[in-house]
Length: 346
Ligand code: BGC
Image 1 (cartoon, rainbow, N blue to C red):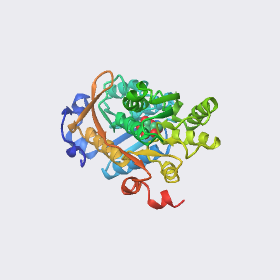
Image 2 (image 1 turned 60 degrees about the vertical axis):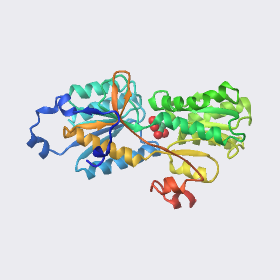
Image 3 (image 1 turned 30 degrees about the vertical axis):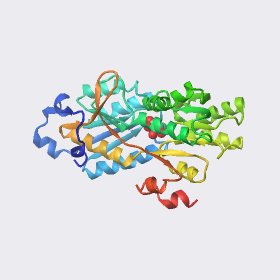
Image 4 (image 1 turned 90 degrees about the vertical axis):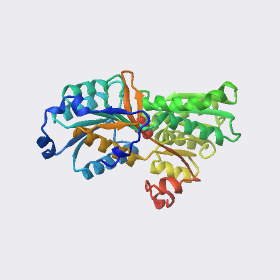
């Protein structure tokens, strides 16, 4: 269990899931002879980010000598609920869920628990349930980094007119990104130094919905704003398409997140200003290792906790890094997330 041992303790939360959830009936011999199967219910595989998560997760599970069953719900709550039910019917040992809707999937956690199966929330929190473990990034920090970058890089730093594109309201992370952005923007807005001329939520994080939001701002205010505070690379892409049609691409600061290859290419070509590198390999490996450890009835120690409305969920939150054209090579390329050729060799 490479990573589990590395988790040092500030807030120690010990969880002996196997015992707590009544998986104690297997004998030692049964446990060691059975191949562990981990279910992974994903919201979507339509975005580049989640395709990477899937590949990293599969590889980590294989390296641990376990098996995984991965299902994707195509951004549909009913399908995701059925996916979890099917993983329960298949008697997987642990279920990992990247929820489309963090409020709806509490019911899935309850069903899994009734079947004695522990559940890990992957990247996105599942609210109001007795979730066993949450593995993600510091998502408030993501929002803070985006807003701070924008504030510092406005044509007149700390001053300007902006539009904001939030993510999917159904995704707890979208709320956390907004919260982090608000933390930074508040004093600037209160002083009147920064003015939000338009803002909206991009349903299901879709670029086409982000494009509509940017279109609405341009129709109403023309080329009068300095920045688009977009919450991820997909929404940045939608906004940039809209900016291109108005001949504003490259003239307006645009934020993002995920370090998608196309976003990195847009950054080096000057259409997008920044993104955020989230080490997906590390998050997928941590989830895979934790899932297998839980399946083996091991005690996991989480260094943090995050309140999901029902309990302080033991949590492992990884760090993120701001990326722009100046540190692209030292971050995304150095980490092997994308090759230099892929980014620059267009
Ligand atoms: C993830 C982001 C991603 C977004 C859209 C969020 O929950 O944290 O990395 O861009 O969902 O898929």
